[in-house]
Image (cartoon, rainbow, N blue to C red; front, top):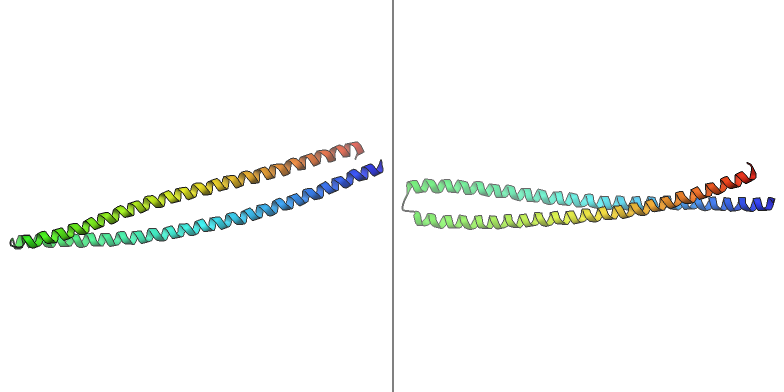
Length: 170
């Protein structure tokens, strides 16, 4: 009888040792996952910084466009004064208007390109965030299943210990 109890006690101690090793391994895995998440979040932050820099560059371009528009407005004012002063320069003024219209066409093309760039960037950001969310959900579910498995095993061992204690009247 003593040998059987000692054998059971040894198996319980071995089971507890394994359980503690499993807990250590789970903690190590959780730490590794946390480090991976931190690295991924740092990479996302860096991408946001790069995007902010790009937006700053776009803002500077818009400022330059605004300055060009102001210059165009000043040119139109000068053209109006010239029309009032000299009616003989209509042909020269028509050529200048054609030049300004060509420049406005380039500006409109540039604005269309910027709009397309914004749409593309927004699409990429949306896809990246969707991918990140999916990865986070998958990792969370894996972690939850590992934790649930660990708790189920721990409960089983506790029940077995309680049964043994009942049998031994401890």
